[in-house]
Image (cartoon, rainbow, N blue to C red; front, side, top):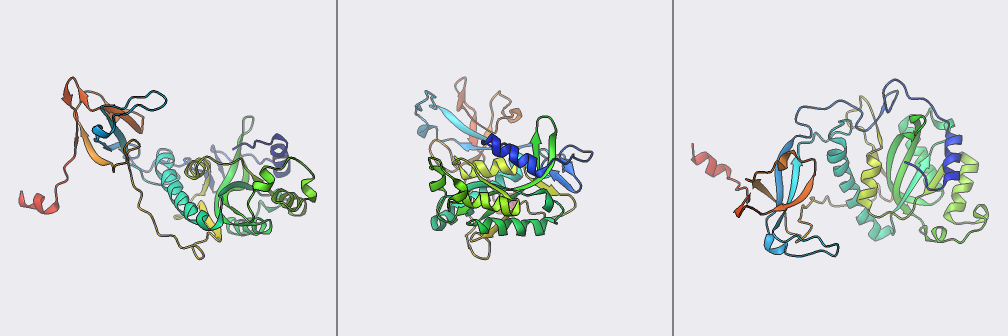
Length: 322
């Protein structure tokens, strides 16, 4: 949650001002950092089952970095998750993964019509700290629309982090969305008077002078999923709201304007791209206790096959056995 431009970073901090957190770590009033709640139940994070790919005949290859996958089984450990952003165990590997997948799917479909997905941050001036979250979101969308951000997703962050002060109250929104005309012109600009320019950066400077809102575009992101997942890991929720929406859509990406068919998440092997199946392990290793989510394991141990696909019994067959 830092900015690459140190001078702008300092300008943001000076302008927003720091308010100390109340009592608990990562908390201010009714707002909390994700993962700063209670564990939902005793199953959270516990091992549930293995999924993997037993097509070892298709894994007989050596990658460019010298890793040999011959005779290896791809293994994914599935753990129980309550899917709540407040849970300190499940918020990263459960809730954030699911939300990031949804964001990725919707933005990929939108990019076919609106171009390159950009990652921005919109920082709120101290004068608007007292606005209710709904009103604040509407004002942020108004400011973004004013400078040419035509749509995307807002991810609410109530706090920033400083090594000296720790987490402190500083509401802002990370945005993944689309800029009218794109950002390439400003990203590859060789320098000049941005305030006099009609490019996107020039519009953001004028917005700050007129309204106090600071909008910054980050460097080109590597993946949509990775960016969304990381920003969700530092987002915030409101205590006591049953269906609090941390990520909200606006503009040409709103649910009213952009219709996207929900996509079933497909789990495939990273080597051969075959669908993963539920598997059983009969070896001597404690694979279920490993903290790794994914790994490649030997198909045979001491000459014995130690993996097998779990056979699913149909309800009809199960009933006939009674």
